Length: 328
Image 1: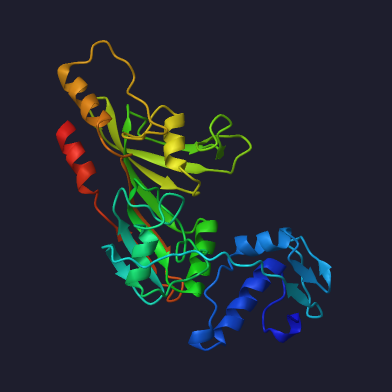
Image 2 (image 1 turned 135 degrees about the vertical axis):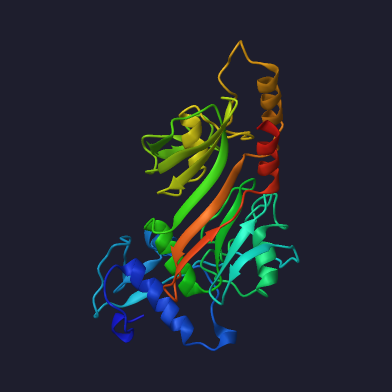
């Protein structure tokens, strides 16, 4: 690929390659378009693994500044085929246009295929709904997926239908310009509001868990207390500045307010010898709740194409509402 052949502003090689592929792909007829995985992260991986040459020399610097005289050669590794089937699974669509979907995800619904979950996922359902036409930037296992919610987390989620929407939405998440608010039930009663600014990384003791880790990635969570129940349980709202894996669950657990129903980071209320029968009943009901009581309630963002301000707000699901009603 000769840089001078593409009407793209010169700059970082990783960003230039993404734009060049999109431009190249847009010139193909529909039956020849490439539905593939050219996210900035994937391009970075190609660069770091030595699969991209500039003027015949391997370049392993994603921030390398290109110029019009450069010639870029890309060696694409062999694609591993993945049998991803479209499945007629009902999904709750809050908004849809030609570029994106906003979905109200049900609890106990896996977002994308993984070992042990090759079917029955949200991706399988979306492929069916969109007749197999989704942005491929998320990868062969995650087409259209811009961000994810845990299996047990309910609520609003964005899905990209086109490459241009996927790239734009991914940048918005990276730049923290998409506003996300969650509601959740936690043990004990926190202050009326607060901020947790603690990095999150893999636990040193259990690689399947995340933890507060000074060598981890920056993570910032704001919380506001909404309601309390018998001085044992609280309904709070959390606003994310960052989007780390299990961020809310790890952060709230770190300050003594783990989520109700969280089997990984959960706990119990502070011990109190004077607990009455009502409080003991509340503890029993909360201990029996089948999932972490976490709900993605609002999404606010600028539409990647129309630039219109979009805002969505979805009520708490029945299981959390029923639990709240039973402990009031």
